[in-house]
Image (cartoon, rainbow, N blue to C red; front, side):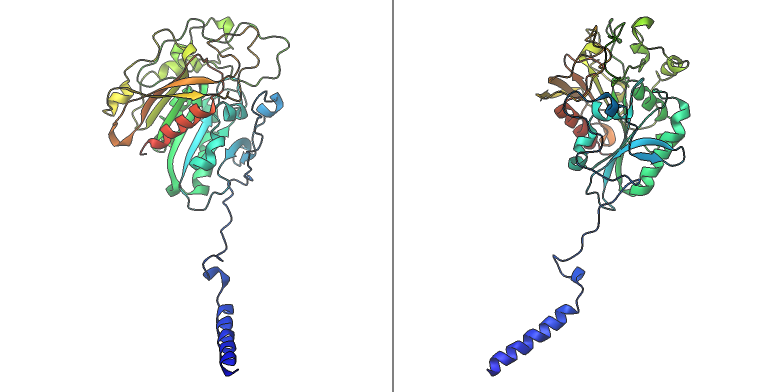
Length: 373
């Protein structure tokens, strides 16, 4: 009895001592910090306003986003890992749609949001009210970047990439030279938006078909203006009217930028002439990269989300057909100085507007993340 009484007294002392210790100090009981919320946007899985695997409704595609840039009052999409922690290192991407398009179409054309948790991506996808980018939009884009940098912390952004499709690529090429962006951007992914270091030729039939079907569904596509001088081959009646100044801006971008960043070019095979992608790259030569090597092909058995639903009657393969599986060739210029990445990706038998398939999307993300800075 005395031994049991002594044991009970000991247990009482231990329990009293434990009660005095905050639970947060005990391993396994520490309260987890809540996930970080950016720009007042509630993170969702799947992301908000996500298209189904096929036949994305037109009203969904033209949605403007769930975030608001406070200085201009303009909306944009902001996708980020739902379990993002304060102080976590991430890759930030500003993704620009093409001429005649919308942010949510771009979001599904290159579906970065499907990989945000796996690869720790923060993606801002803005909208141009006139459906094409102009210098008057620069303040809006700059404010979005500043907002994200401030909320995440500049020191927590491992790399900042621009992504642009068609005229969004041309706009990336323009703004990457400006004082605001030139010292911030670590890489640019051009999705049929012009190639640094030597452009491929355009196919003679490049451009949207002459007359969309009267029964076409709501626009859910990029009816792009030329993304570079080489895209202006189609007759003017075969493509949307080009706003004044865009052609001149394209001509001004023929000279390569002077700042340093990684560069990846992706295009559909049917957008180019029979010569295809040049084997050499002046941009690769700038960084002393090795001769181009071909990496394993990327094979997709699943189609992308979106396409130009307004330009299928009659269709034009160079402009883009219905979404479908495919194969992509991947070329890289290895051993670039300072860990830069220079690469080309060609989607076989694809045109300008078929949305990227899941595996080739992931391959492009991997190439972006493989850059040292």
